[in-house]
Image (cartoon, rainbow, N blue to C red; front, side, top):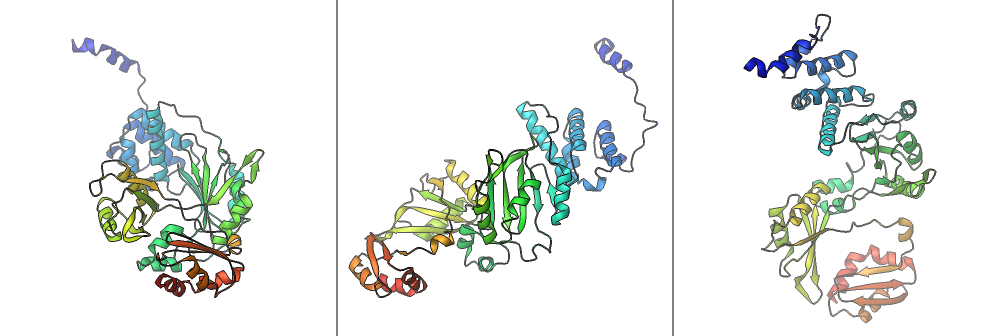
Length: 426
C-alpha cells in the first residue's frame, strides 16, 4: 500500500537524471556551508559564487548564512541569483548587502509581486570617472548609495561637521544639549524631486559648486532598483549648505524636472497639550521621563497674570530625532496616560535659523517675560536711550520695540541680558 501511495514520487525520482558531481570542484569552504545547515544545491550555488571572485567566504558573516538557511531551497537559490547579478563594484559590506537582498525578496513575497528584471542603473563609466576625478569613495547598500564621508584630505581635512564643535563640547558637559538638538550644525541639505534614474554623476558636479561635500546619501528603493527621489547632502561648512539652497533649489536638472532643496532639520522636539496647569517644569520632566526615553529638557510657558501656572502645553526636547519619534508613537498610541490623562502630541515646528541677509536688515526687537506693571511708556523711555524709536507695542507679557536705525537694535541685543533684567524689575 505504501508503495502505491508513494508510487508517483518513486517514478518521478527514477525519471530524474542523477546529478553528476564527479566533475564538480568545490572550494575549501563548501564543507563548512554544508555543516552550517545549507541544502546541498544552495551550498553549491554559493560556492560557485565564491569561485567567481564576486565575493569571498570571509566576506559573509554568520548572520548572512543563518538568514539564508531560513529560506526554502527555491527561495535561497533565487536570492543567490539576484545577488550574483547585482553590481557589487562599490559594495563595501557584501554580507550586509546579501541580507538586504534577502529582505527585499521577502517584501516582494508579502506583496505577491515577482522579482523584477534588473533595472538599468547608473552609467558605471561615468561613476568611475567621477570617483577618479574627486578621489571620493562610494559605498552601495540595498537602501542607499553613499558618496564620500569622509572626503579626501585634499578636499577637507577638518573635523566631521557636528563633531568637535564648541556646541558639541558643551553638550558633552550637559550644558547645551537643547541648543544642539534644536538647531544642529545646519550643514546638511535635503534634495527632493530627483528623477528616479539619476545618480551621483549628475548630482555631485552640481552641488560641489556650492562648496566641499562631506557626503551625499542617495536613498534607494530595493524593490525597483531605482532611487527614491530624494537625497541628503552634508557639506563641510554651514555657508556651503546655504549656498547650495540658493544655487540648486528649483534648478532644472533635466528638461521639466526641477529639484527642491532646503536645509535639513532633524526635529527633536514635540508639542504636548492637555498638561495640567499646576505642573512645574520639574514635574513634567519627571513624569514624561517615566514613559519615554531620551528626554533632555522641557520648555514651559507660564500665564502672564499668574507665573505659578503654565499655559496648558509644553515642548519636550529629546536627545535625537529617533528618540523623539519613538516618544511620539508611544504617546499617540492611547495606551500611555500622564497624570491619568491621554495627552495630545504633535511634532513641534522646527526652529529655523534666519537668513543672515534678512537679519542684517532687522530693526525690531522682541522683549518677553515682562511684568504686568511694565507699560509701553516705561519701555519707550528705557529703550529710547539706545536710539530713536518708531513705536512700541506691548501684548500681555511681551512687546515689540521698533527702532528707526538697526545700529540701535544691535546695541540693545549686545546688552540684552542686563537690560532685560532691568526691564523685568521695573
